[in-house]
Length: 124
Image (cartoon, rainbow, N blue to C red):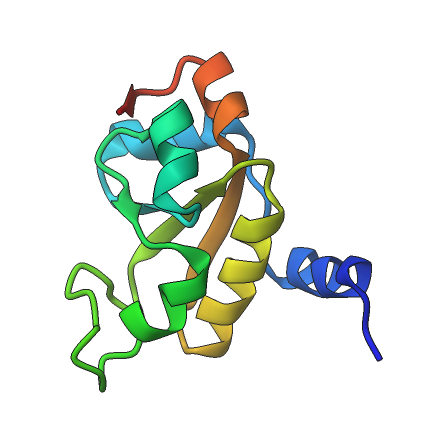
């Protein structure tokens, strides 16, 4: 049986963690798709990365499956995807899920507070 620590270790082993500065550089280049995996209540409290898709972790598998009518057409398996959450754990776990679903270029920029503290563009 696995515990939360083991799930996070596995996710962190396959989903690269990038710094807020590296994420801001990707954002500025305009070639990456940013996704906030927190629920709408948490996003309402802190805001999110400017232009980020808002796909809660609990719905991600449905939004990322092109065979379902829930599929978010903004997602592409060859896109450079940058995930954010509250502290980095949910983004890591979501990234592992996306990789298992065939999304190849997925990374974790960590928590939104680090993004904001580093001067990343954000929106309500």
